[in-house]
Length: 216
Image (cartoon, rainbow, N blue to C red; front, side):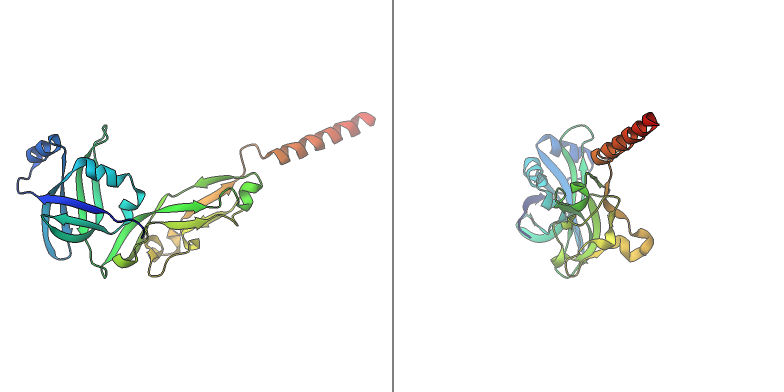
C-alpha cells in the first residue's frame, strides 16, 4: 500500500444531537472508534483535515492510523455520514483492526487497457457494471484496489467476479455464497445500430441488389 493516512482526534464526553451540532459549527466532525474487544471511544476530528483525506480514493480501503488523545490505533473507515445537500461530513465511524483480524471491505476496481482491448478496437463500447467489490481478507492483506485487465475482452463478452485475479489471501465475499452470485463486472457491447463497418456492408449489399434488379 503506497499511502499513509494519519487522523489526529480528540476524545469527547459531550454526546447527543445537540453536542454534535455545536461541534459541527466549530468546524469539527463527531465520530466513534470501536472494535477489537475494546470499549468504543467517541472523538472529534477537524472537518477540513478529514475532507482532505477523503479526496484520496485509497482512504476508503486502507489501514488508517487513528490517534485519539495521543493513543495510536490501527483502523479502517466503516461508515461515513454526509450532509444531503452540502459538501460536509456529519459523522464518521472507524473500526479498530489488527493485522490478523479478518475484515470485509469494499474496494474499488481499476480497469486497464480499455482502448487496447479486442472489443474496443472492433468498435465496441465498454460498460462498467460494478465499480467496487466487497472482499474478505486479513487486515494485513487489504489491497487498495483490484486491477481488471480488458485486453482480451471482445464485443459481446463480459468479465465476471470469478475472472478477477486476486492478491494472495483475498476472497470476493459474494463468491463465498455460491456461483449464483458470480456477477458480471464489465462488458463490451456493439454500439446501437451496429458499427460503421456493418453499416457500410449493408449499404453495399443494398446497392448490389438494386443494381441487379435494374439490369433484369
